Length: 225
Image (cartoon, rainbow, N blue to C red; front, side):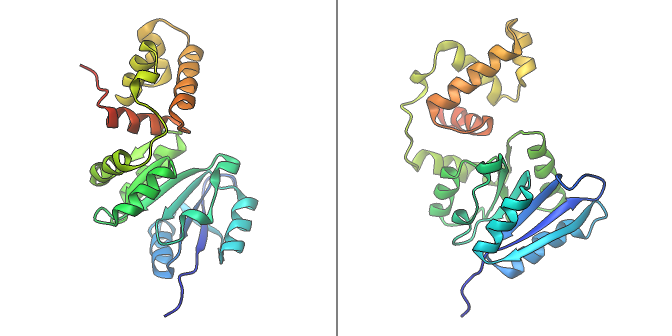
């Protein structure tokens, strides 16, 4: 049996610049072809480049720096890419009935989004649009597994007591979908002040972006009463 070999297909939006690309990464040829076809069969997208083998994949990603990376979570996919070098946003495709160990690894990767591997083309496009807005995407069929993986994963934080009262209040608003401007208007403070609180929470909780704050709030049961 042939060993899985990581591959990447870089796709661009037909009406945008070369910078507006996304990369689809998988360690199975059929999976890579199927995911690419979901988008390339539409006039909105165009083929840009492809590569196979971990070295070639890393070289292509470092060259093109796609803002969005769609990663099919096979056996060795996690270690193949590091989009943090250019602030790329990682969208992980996971099996709702998959191995709990894979979900634990996914949580530790701190992605910007989780998408069911069986998602439709429409759902895939919506997840990509959401990540382009720097927001967080969690596919409903995966929410239970993701939350369980978070509870089981090693967590360097000690819980919500690490946050100030104002930080906890802002975190609850973030988890409810409020934007920085919405929160600033609600509490009559500057958007920059809200952003500073968000940055402080990310540092305290050892997370990298707002999406992980949303998951943390859900894990801790921090909701609006």
